[in-house]
Image (cartoon, helix red, strand yellow):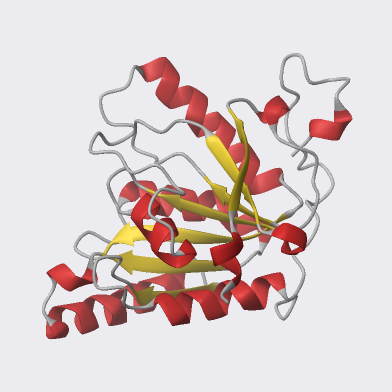
Length: 225
């Protein structure tokens, strides 16, 4: 059985200080609002309601942790873009996401979900820029690929991989469709390899590149990302 099919809800966090203590490798799923991230998680977990699917982009604004038993955690990050939300909320989540991605030492890799019809948006590139200094792997799911013709999908995948070589060499990409359930095995193989430690362990954050203190967190070291 693929490991993600064992996923069960564990906890949610709104602030960095709410993050649970590190207790095994974490695989984060990130994606722009309405890119199909929740549907991709549900398809990989073979569950219909593990991740919340909303018709309103940006509605889910918590970091959700799902336990994979002894194997670690799947971490569902809020969909960035936050359509129709106040500016202060947008800034809050930009700060939380950037700090989590850059400084959470138990974060092993990131699955970045992009709409195959609109890959590598400025917001996608920002996520990659935040993650680049860590040297940790990224795997991109080009979702909704069923909405493209075979030739269009092939060209999109080729162009995306070519661009990624320039901006994030430690990144792989594939076509994916939650509706058609295509690309599941390829994505599962990548995630399983990360959790099995078949990839190089992620480096520690370099000295002087530590997370800025969060108000109220100075004496709660057990909750540092």
